[in-house]
Amino acid sequence: MATTVPAAELELTKDNLGEAHIVALAKCGDCAERRPLQEEGVPADGTTVALALATYELDKTTNKRKGQIVPCTVAIAQDSACDQSPKYKLCPQTDVADLAGVFDIKWSADGNMLASAHADGTCQVRTVASLHEATPLAAAQLQTKDDEEEVEASESCFCLSLDWNDRAGCAPGEAKLAVSRSDGKLSVLAMRSDGLEAVHTWDAHAYPGPAPAEVWITAFDCFDPQVLISGADEAKLKLWDQRVGTDMPLGVCNVHDAGVCSAQFHPRKPNIFATGSYDSHVRIWDKRNLKKPTLEPLDTSGGVWRVKWHPTDDDRLLVAAMRSGFIETKISTSNAKLEPLRFYRDNFEPGRWEALGYGVDWLRVRGQPADLVVGASFYDRKGYLFSPTQCTAVQ
Image (cartoon, rainbow, N blue to C red; front, side, top):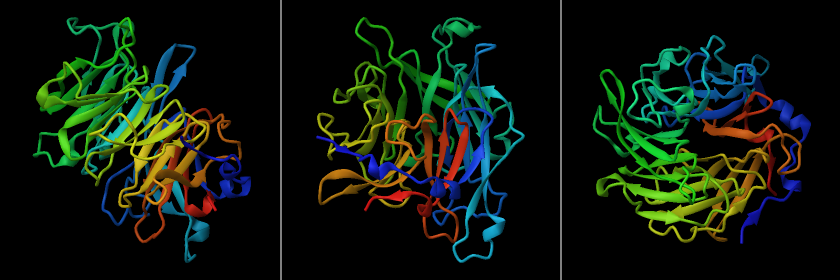
């Protein structure tokens, strides 16, 4: 049985929402990623890149999928510069290049490079200084027909998500990227002097038939750079270990009732990871047992597009719950379940926020004791910067 978020608890007043800092995006927002800098947080100096937003949009005139990577700094709002608890504002860079639509972005562990997954079948890597530029530091074109030098747009897969394996203490120069694809495959890429190289690709997910299933998410184990998980549209979650080969997964989970579209390993607890699904549930798992979640799941009343563990608090998890907005949750050890703490969203009933909350992450500003939350919503093309005073807390 799952914990369900009550409608009354998800309401956020217009006045409170107005206190949050909101920025307009040129295209539909679908990614928000905090740059992993010092544990004490990023300076609110308006110059240090603190996070990146990304966008994806289908141009119906040209039938092309376009997007942007938008680096952002954080600054103190002028009207609160002298306050004991100042308000912060999001400062997005405006002169950014148009790219192929962006499905996912991830920072390297040192915060010096940002990888992006694109609708044209490319995976790209940029340095902090070149986030706004069209030409990446390195790129790889992933395609369904591997034997052709040139691939038509119809033959190119979408790169749907990606993750670095460098949190597990890889040797310098040995970091790799896992990329999930719309053609049912997973690819592992390595950085080379002349770009990115796909060193391993395999068929990971398929419907009965077997038509390929879109692999919405992949994530590396934070403690083992050879282990990763993947989730796909056919509602299966799979565990892989590259050392024993990828002809068969180490484990398969059939618990989700719809596509698995989000997953993240815990950065400090070995074996533990969280998943989100189109079935609206957030689940916590131990990779040694994929038959049953470790805690009672949380029903958000909205498809769960992203989950993000807190950078220092072991029990807190942020959720981008699409039609239910952005939700901060906490593991209740006494009740053995995942419970909602705070809600960051417009004043709609759960499951009815038409803007869709897609991107979400934590953000800590240096000298600010409370965590901030950054979000990206899709159809209204907005980026959000919330503090705990701009949300509804569960009583």
